[in-house]
Length: 118
Image 1 (cartoon, one colour):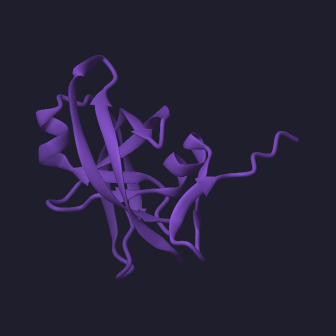
Image 2: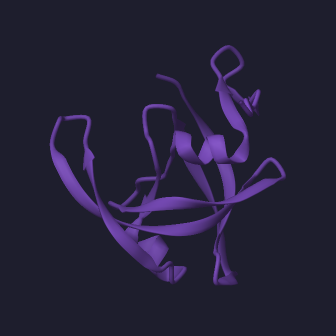
């Protein structure tokens, strides 16, 4: 698994004035993006459901999810976000793929992904 630190701009898709710059740990082992529940509540991110997740220690937890806007390297998208614990800022592989980005394990930076259509 690979990971790097990445700065991003996030916002409430229904009220873009509610926004913030955050630093993530980009981790290809994480499916979804995770941010602290307190931060998502400050941005008034709507909860749209709950999902079950397996943690690194093999426990299963259930967490709320929502949708945020995110911008990295002049690319932006809307993506699922998990309402997580304090100080957890994980940029998951789903968001990276939605942005058309991947982690280059050699340079330890994000790079444009070769997108396959068929």
